[in-house]
Each structure stands twice: as C-alpha cells, then as structure tokens.
Image (tube, rainbow, N blue to C red; front, side, top):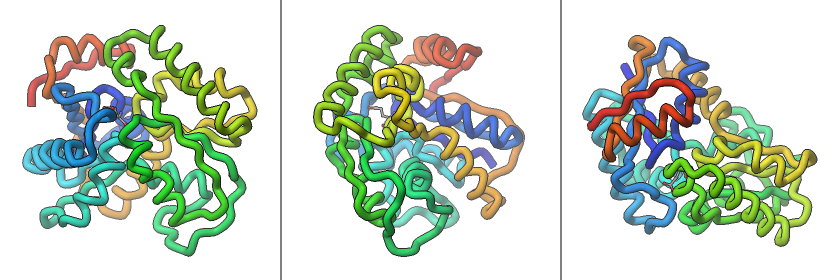
Length: 270
Ligand code: DGL
C-alpha cells in the first residue's frame, strides 16, 4: 500500500527523495497543493482545513498512512487532526517530532520526562505560520529543559524557491540568518524547519559559519518512517512506484520539480 507524502508545494520532495532512498521498495503518492501554496502566510484555521481536505483525498486513494512533509501543516494541523480523531486504520504523521528527537538525543517513543541536553542555543528557521504556532517550542519543551530557541520567520523564501528564483532565495536566506544572529549571536544548532530549505542548506551553513550544526529533516524523517513501517508493516508495501499529484498546473510543476531534483519528475492532476 502506497504511503502518502503531503506538502503545499515542492519542498516535500526533499523528504520524498530521502524516504525513497531509505525504502526503495515502498510505493508513495506525493501530493502538492500548489493551488493554495504557500501555506506559510495563511492562518492556522485555513492551513488546518486545507491539510485535512488533502489528507482525506490521500486516505481515499488508499494511502492508509500519510506523512505531512510540511512543517507548516505539521505545526498548524497535525495535533488538531489527531485530536479530532482519524478514520479507523488511517494514520497521519508529521515531520517535527523526528527532528526534535534528534536534537534532544532521544529514541522514538521515549516519553520520559524532559531533561537537560547538550545543545542550549537553537536557531529555528521556518515559515511565518510555523513560527507563530510555537509548535516547535511546545514539542521541544516536552522533551528538553534549558534550551533557548530563537525563531526567525523566513518570509519570501518559499515563494522564491517555487518561482525558481534561487538568487533571490539565497539573498533572503542570508538576510534572515543575519537577522537571527542579531538576536542570538552564537547558536550551537540551527534547525531548517521548512521542507523547502534543504534546497538552500549550503547557503544556510555558509551564512551561519562552520561552528553551527545544521539539522535538516529529510534523513531524520526517512529513518523515522522506516522504523514506523517496520513496526506497522500493514501500513506500507506495494512496489517502489511513485505517483506525483498537484492541485496546480501539472506542466509548470513538472518543469520546476525536474529542475530542482535534476531528474525527470512528472506531475498530474489528482
Ligand atoms: N514546505 C512547507 C514547510 O515545510 C511550507 C511551505 C509553504 O509556506 O507553503 O513548512
């Protein structure tokens, strides 16, 4: 059975790429809501409604497990969807927890009380909606104490990436890093809390300097999904086929995706 991977746009392809490498025999359906992207400037209610609608589409297409490969959707919708209750035998997971577990040196499912961890000063780069939700700080507080988080809302970066304007995207990243380091001069770690940002990981790392460990989600999510499917084999399986769906213009999205991942990726309408 295919696993659904959901994002507002192309960013989740960074996650899909990593999970397909870790799980080459697993089938996936990638669903991008380009018609309503970017999510990062929307209200939390809006993000919740859009995410719920598209996750339901993926469930109805037979994906029992859907991964929100989008921090903005994970921040605004995941907890709310889980609390409202999901249909029997269906699951939805997010991308926050695997990253926070890595940062706080925890194994999956370690629900022991929060404790001191090595990292004390963390810079979070994310969309305005993710920063406003404070979901990262909330999930971190369940697991660690004494960690100072400075969050930088990176307005404009997702739009520039989706438009293929990488020069603008890089300039914006440098200015967001500068704004962050004015508030927190010496972060020990930086979290790229948006699935689009790994496409600019080098720019973040160069602007932050070699002393800052940059945590990017794709590989962490891949490990965590592989672990989850080993424990819940009925949620995965099938062949290694991947289908790519977009609510936007499939030919435009196909061109951009092919340019980003440097291999042919063909999107179609859902
Ligand atoms: N890539 C998404 C994330 O991880 C959000 C991009 C958007 O603003 O739509 O947050």
